Length: 109
Image (spheres, rainbow, N blue to C red):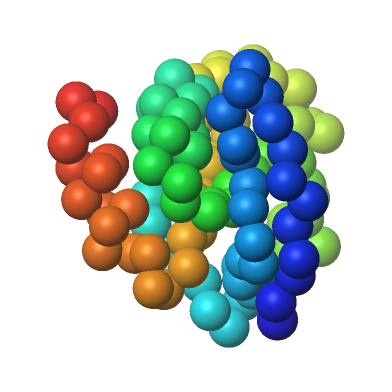
């Protein structure tokens, strides 16, 4: 699916121009998974600075699911490692995967 993007200028730089392909379930590939908000921010900035479209799926590991009531309702957050409560999953277009993988491999994360 193609969408026409509006040209947006930020501090004199053109952020989007022309027609871009949307990232869908059919044309995306999982790039990276992290629990660290700092790593998530570094990867997001690197992809943005290299004009690679991405999507982030955030999963709250403490929330209950239909298959498991979860421990938070029973015990609260007692004894839980708060650093791994959120999982961040990065997706990029399949056509951008190799470039994106190269970019994040250059980061010191």
